[in-house]
Image 1: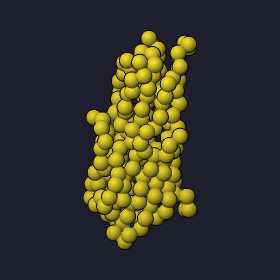
Image 2: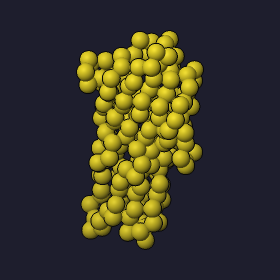
Image 3: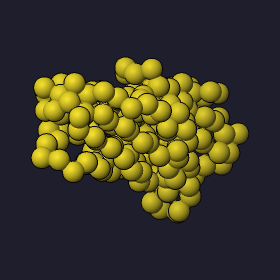
Length: 173
């Protein structure tokens, strides 16, 4: 299991916030003799090193069209880094695949319990509202993962973590 990481966020007074979101991937496989070859989180979500506004800010990674997407900071400044996550599904047999992302995930500060929310994961991730035809033959489907990080006014500095589950339903044809 790979972590989805939200790197340093920095306010105008240079507070540092490190976010780590661990993504559990669960396969729900129809009863058949076929085996899943591989499902993996190949690249973690990283929001990068961000200078955000004291009044709050929003950082968006819109990966709904696929590819590697950089974060967009609404009011602040992206100093460095950041990109969408990447989920890879490789199967031997032809199948229908449905990816169900969570709507949101709460991140908690390890030191003081403060919270931030990653929202719109389903809307900002690739293949969230469709059933994919997987060709089999060890071909890969790549699904980009995005989200919107809401940073409220007065967000506490420190390290934040949260968990979310991506359900993957595979129906062999």
